[in-house]
Length: 333
Image 1 (tube, rainbow, N blue to C red):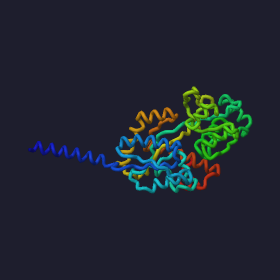
Image 2: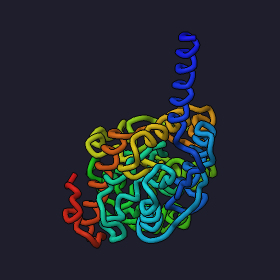
Image 3: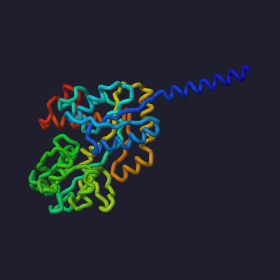
């Protein structure tokens, strides 16, 4: 009888422990993407959310809340929801400028970010230019400073920061023309308004394959093999000085407030790690030229702290920010 009682207690303990382990999530989760449907952040979040949902055993419903500055409408909406892990906020590195642009009154460290990854930037030219290599372009820009027009999305964007890094690391000076996004800047290159464009490989891939743009160099230390195009060399090969300023990479994923219960956050981290490793996510990343990260916790926080510092102070120095980064406690890079 005593043995039977002990056995029953062990079974009860196991069942009870299992019930507590599965306490979260008990219902569907919402992922609030701060950028528009069909964009890079939206697509990335839908892919990872679908895989995480299979692991968690609940639906993750992805919605879009756009508007404001630097995605501030979606950020504020996501942050205003109960901090229980049932609301994820899909975002990217560009959201770190919401504070200095007046749409967010906090430092970015109130978020714990789950970084899926991003597509590396590439510097390209229009086919009618005489520049066949990155060295051709850089030396021309050094010989005649600001004579060559370059587009890289808006002032303070990740693509603009990469262009500035190329200038600082090589000594070249371009005539920067800001546009409202990657697509408009790429269209400007095809229309002959600019000769150089810096955007991500994922965004340029179709234009490169179609002969509308010619890639000169990846803005990461590694070269990149692109189907149908061959190998795009690393810009570091020709200009080692770029390593002082690059890489500045995309960081796309989602976040939860830092004060979400630790046990709920741990469940999300586990599901995220397993989702990143799935064949579906790995294949998607390879086909779309994304470099997967998988960083969470202290690692992802360090990434976003560096991005916030770099982006915010660059905007402030360009006189494109409304709020002094120092007033938000954002340190200089």
